Amino acid sequence: MLSLLPFPEVAYIRKQQDIMEEVAAQNISSIKDQMHLARERAQADASAYRLKAEAESNLALLTPSYLEYVRYQAVANATKIYFGNSIPSMFTSAALDDAKKR
Image 1 (tube, rainbow, N blue to C red):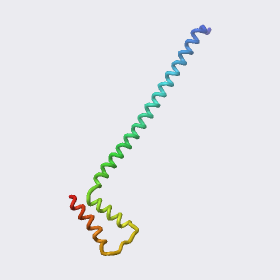
Image 2 (image 1 turned 120 degrees about the vertical axis):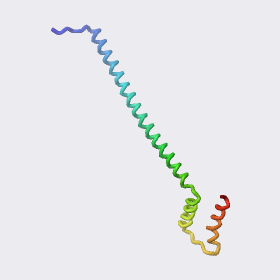
Image 3 (image 1 turned 135 degrees about the horizontal axis):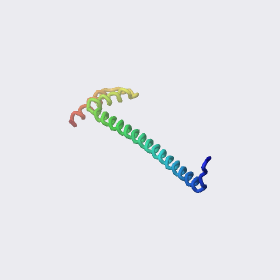
Image 4 (image 1 turned 180 degrees about the vertical axis):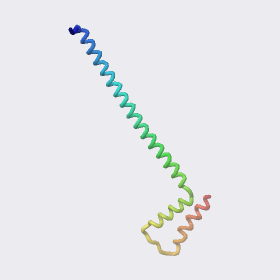
């Protein structure tokens, strides 16, 4: 024979079950939030590391010989054509100015 529980006990058990379900949902939400935060933090750290490494490599490139190379590249890519006797002085005057600064 089945023993039936009185109504107040059944209501109490159902209420406890509802509370446990809400707590479980909160725990799941908290875990999801922590996972999202960790993922975002990892992406931010990776981005910061990449930018830092890029900045350090750019500083290493800023040597006088590299800057001179970039200047020659810019002149070579210019679409204007210059004629006259003062053209060599355009290159040598810049090199002399750099040498005087050192």
